[in-house]
Image (cartoon, rainbow, N blue to C red; front, side, top):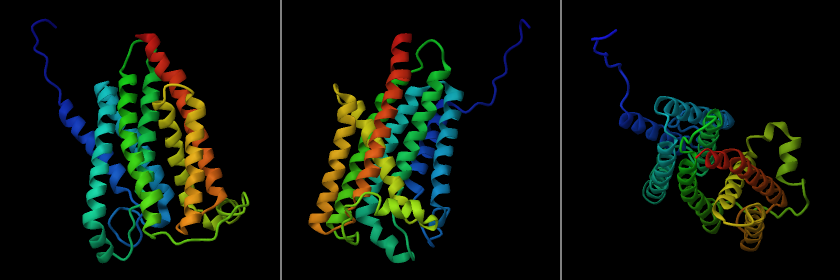
Length: 288
């Protein structure tokens, strides 16, 4: 009707929406740690896999809600990038200044596995952005820019995760040494597949697959040529060197089954990059 002044609806301004989304992503990345009898972070260690599912689903919900409200994937990528950097800084501060105090005041709490939740959160954001890209038939919605920021943020987390989980914990003797297993499917994978009640005890195998999946995805995203070969070969070579290092230094758990799980992760990561490149990045380039 002419002459009627439109009434402003109660909508959350974009800057506040972005701030809430940033806090949500940081919260999922940093706070969903592996805990037990500490009573701090939600659910104890017996429910680790539901924790992973919760992180994934909440990251999907947060990202989908933000995109549907603002139709902006570029900001989603920037949030992923900057919150990853924030997690890196926060973890370094926590590890070197507050970790001993936390360990002394609570019966049991460990912070190592929250990097798995970081990876799961990143993958959830990537999946949600991919669905948004596929849902738009024509035109650009900023997926290429989103993916550039996504990779930058993931690299920060990956490097820190590698240094702490695969080097410092072992070199500092924080991991108990076990005899090397050189027979495929006779080590951790044997326990995983044949003892149903040991699934939680072998949780780190799932973490290895997720970690090296992200490794393969990032390598394929960063190199300019031979993406598939390098994206698979480099993580596998690193995995083999890590097992050799554990054996020679007598720190950690050298196991050929770890190499198998890591190789599977690298293959899945390269496959994920192929899907992203073929159906998402190339589609947006064609639409521009």
